[in-house]
Image (cartoon, rainbow, N blue to C red; front, side):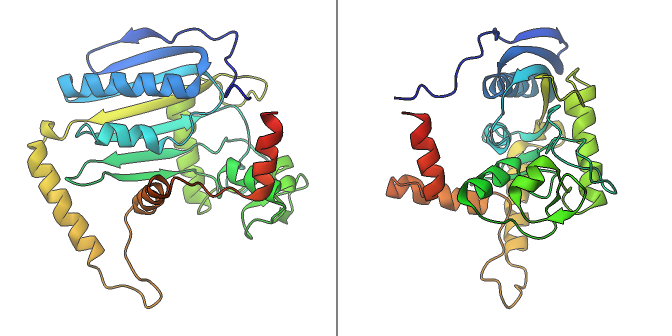
Length: 278
């Protein structure tokens, strides 16, 4: 049987190197990024509950954080507003106007508390998540037009060619600007490597805001509920059945999976996973 994600033999427990009442810088010591990201999220929650706001960053993480929406959702469920940025030296995405990969996919996420499920946006600043390319390649499928370039700078729908070339940024220059922001906050600012592809030094930054530094949290949630009702009550386009807020589709899928006890897996991906655990 497989043993899950292998432990980084060089990894150690994350360490707080510098902190104030509202901030902290953490050395991840090449521990798996999911562990470190959860650590800095918990630290940000603790500080924001006490001081009203917190910003906690880390450098030196290994592997992937997974979906960073998980962490801002965790913050929002504590009644706080959460923001998160991740960056890595793994160059997959070209800045606007270029076909050469310089950025990673540099995801950004936010979580906003309500009286119901939090509103959670989790998006890459690239036109497609890198794991989406891997999934398409494994399934033997093409991706949509406008997603990326091959190694010669030609637009292509072949995921393997894009993996050798570069993803485009989402929404052109707008996504490129957001990718740059992520590279600054979760890269340069916290001490992670930005462009050294041979490095494992990836970084993250989490911001937690306690609504009560501006108004009572319950008042904030009440006003958020009113905002949600107004937005979802907007006049729909003919082809739309519902106005969805960020995170609603994911919540629905999660609920269906839990209720059915089943996860749909593409057959080629299932075969690849079975080979790994042999």
